[in-house]
Image 1 (cartoon, helix red, strand yellow):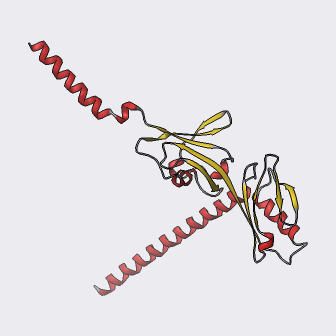
Image 2: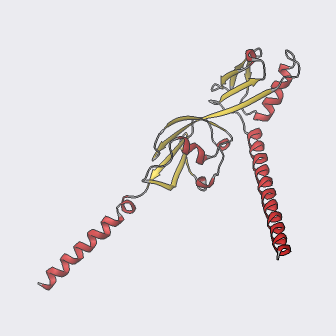
Image 3: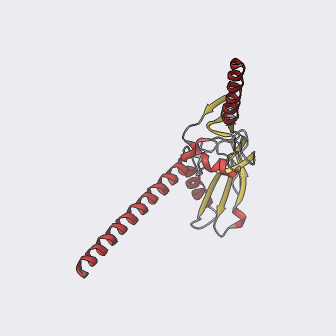
Length: 215
């Protein structure tokens, strides 16, 4: 009996370890995918760049990319950053700052300026990291109101409007957005919000009509 219990316990431990290993592998794959998406994200006019050079506060700064794609970097002056990927910019700055520093350790974070409007609890403008998902952007705005429609979420970019599907399960990433994009959450239809009242009213009306005919 004891031997059987030991075998069962050993089997359970193996299953638990296998599950933990699979979870770690999945998490590692997710982190790697996020890192690739971040590195490949292209810098756009209107973006905000957080430049951090470790142990060198004089070289660290917060920059805004203007409409011409230009930004002024510490010690380097104005540079055209438009359409560069985050990864390429980080590598380029590491080489450029090596002229002033020995083995500089550089971190570049790119933020998009996104408007969130419609049926969210805290509509407004938000600076969001390119690694976050559209779902997390909406969460920053307080989440959906009670009358919001999860199937009626659009992105307005200039004169174009694009409907977004799958956002509630974490797709797409903010790297797919551009600064000045507007996320608009629509509301459910009046009929769906008042279905119970409509059905109840129809029942009352039917009862009245039947009563009239009986008379």
